[in-house]
Length: 168
Ligand SMILES: [Zn+2]
View 1 (tube, rainbow, N blue to C red):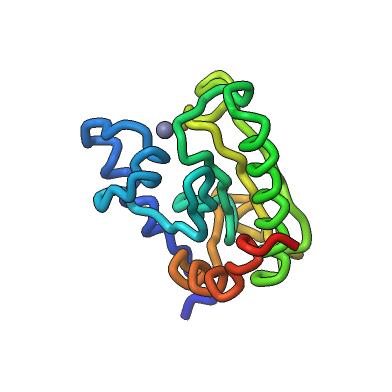
View 2 (view 1 turned 90 degrees about the vertical axis):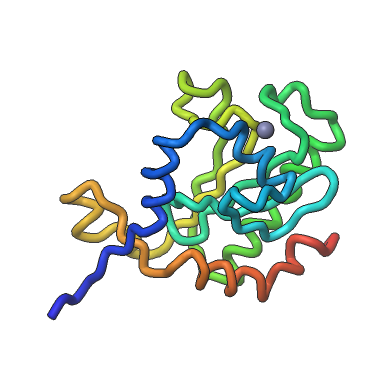
């Protein structure tokens, strides 16, 4: 009898995708609601969207993404820049409330490969951290154990999604 199960099924899409022809910018595809692009969109309006990273570093890994394809942070209008960070703040509130996240790593990879980022389309990563979120597998096997599926997390986040919308 196993005590722990390692679910990595979401990696399969990624592994398979590597062999397919590139289909352009994944965030532009999500913004266009392309049916062939796997996605978990929590919030979207004309300017910004908040989506789940479907290859998450941790449960509840979110991304705040401008709808328009922008690569350089300096190309964003002042209004959209403010709005993007407002949604980062609200996303943190959402993750605290919905998932009980205790800490966060928030960041940007600007400039593609050189920065360690794989997607040029500007996005802010929000990785929630939990008490005891690194265990045996993470420390010894370079493997992240995900205790909750993307669908489960999505459902829980959607229950509190008004946090992203209200202006308080
Ligand atoms: Zn794009």
